Amino acid sequence: MIFIRLLKESFEFAVQAIIVNKLRTILTLLGITIGIFSVISVFTVVDSLENKIESSIENLGSNVVYIQKWPWEFSMDFPWWKYVDRPVAKVKEADEIIKRSQLADAVTFMMSTNKKVQYESIISENTSVMGVMQDFDKTWAFSIDEGRYFTETELLNGRNVAILGPEIAKILFSTISPLNREIRIWGAKIEVVGLFQKKGQDGFGESTDNLIVLPARFVANYEIIDSEMNNPMIVVKAKEGVPNADLSEELRGILRSVRKIKPYQEDNFAINEANMINKGFEQLFSILSLAGWFIGLFSLLVGGFGIANIMFVSVVERTNQIGIQKSLGAKRFFILSQFLFEAVFLSLIGGSFGLILIFLGTLVSTYLLDFPISLYWSNILLGLFVSFIIGIVSGFVPAYKASVLDPVEAIRQGG
Image (tube, rainbow, N blue to C red; front, top):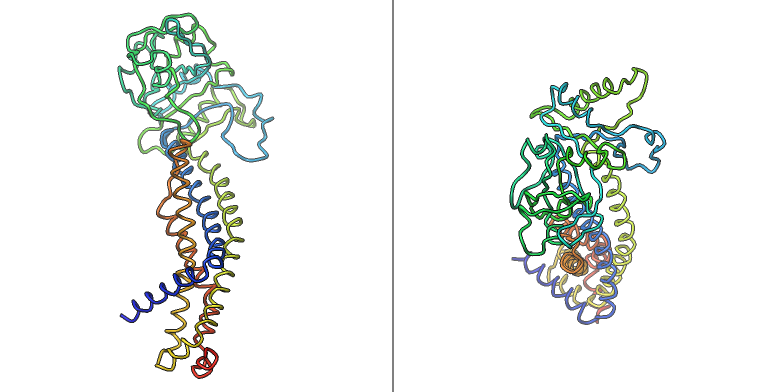
């Protein structure tokens, strides 16, 4: 009961400090508010981006590797000149991997280009078109909303069939169903057999919503599908229980053999994994988090000194009251705790306003700017914890000063 009473009185004194000295207290708490806003807003954005990227990486697959010309690197000193003359992934190399690999569960070849797509008189320029081979559905995460996926015969024989993303379907067909209707690419008639489920952009800005997928062997009638202009890649999924490291080593041996690379020569291909993306972003997010602390630290220091100043003034104004409390038997710890809790409450009030501003910012970003950001409980607790620590640190000296006052001197000074 004493503890609850102590908290109640401390909170009332904190509120009274705000009411009596509105401008001074508000300006002081503004430092805490800005500091918490700076730190936690950065963490909120970083956490939201991390979650979105992790979700995108999960879609890429944790047990999938990508054979490409360029490695996935994020360093500032990226040695591009080492890779610029490398050959790109070829269809025949995918076929060799299918024949030789003992650890691969699925192997597919993919390429992409931008083309004009037409339905009757409606035209969509620079539409993303992807050509895929067998096992694409086993190595890539997607769902079919209407219609169906390609049959094995359609993929092997290169039939003129397509699966559309919902956004491109809306552009070409408006409100009517695109299934079993014909679009034209390269002037060729192509039947729409399926429609991807709407999923929005992933963390890398990619989406099947604006994509048209065709059998690669059909695309080969009009394009050199393993030309560098078409960004070819081989995607390999490991068998269950097979680590990516083992799969990568096997693929490295197969590709070096197919490309006749001598033992003393470096690989002229890259085997990329989804976790490489995560590692690359970790460094960026660490820098952003550090910047958030650096920016917010100055505001927190200003706010901390401001709270300490308020508490010193509060001790002076309530010297008489402190003397009376001590003369009636109040212990030092009680007086120290009373002022310390008051400083903590003031700091928490400032920090709470900062968190409220962040929450309002997430609503604006999510619903007005169409950039989803979430304020997680971990960041709310971090903001409150930092506010609590600032209150303890900034309020300790004034609280200690109040607790050691001589009751007789305090009553005389207060009087």
